Image (cartoon, rainbow, N blue to C red; front, top):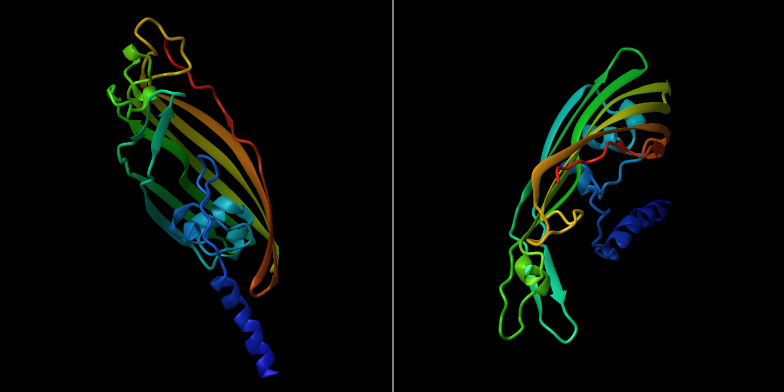
Length: 253
């Protein structure tokens, strides 16, 4: 019997040894929030490991956190970005974006009452992107990015963008039984966008206009969740997240 148990314990180790690295993103949305949830690869639908990840992934799971808690997390995000431009039979080159590291804050708090109710709140940076490509000058050898030429020479010139999305979620969870919890959360979103040049506008004789002034928009949505504890180390989670309805960005032409 002891040998059989030891064999079961070896299964996770064997799986871990054969795991392959995966490089992927979820568009411009982070796959995880906060340092703890990021270390789990964003998994959190049926886990109650940390306040930030629980309130973001499944609001009902905050009922299974132990006691009241407040968490603050900051991540450093510094991706490598490059852009390659090619003209058939013509010049080709790559432009590297200037390194712009970003700090990603995350805050969460959970309050357990003496009743079956548990309340939570989180404020998170959940999405974004940005580049800072310098302009390219023509090279007689053709080793330059034609799309990064100055606009006067038919390119886009220097390209800069900065997009950010912040989400705040007040939530409430009700523990129906010791093993079942239901939750609801309201998502309050804020997004900002800066881009230069502004490619959505009609270019004039000087090229595309700039869009360096911040454009921002508010949005909202909701989250419904259920968590069921099967055993001490096995839980099931079910989540429905609505679309996030945003207002329109606007700019002056």
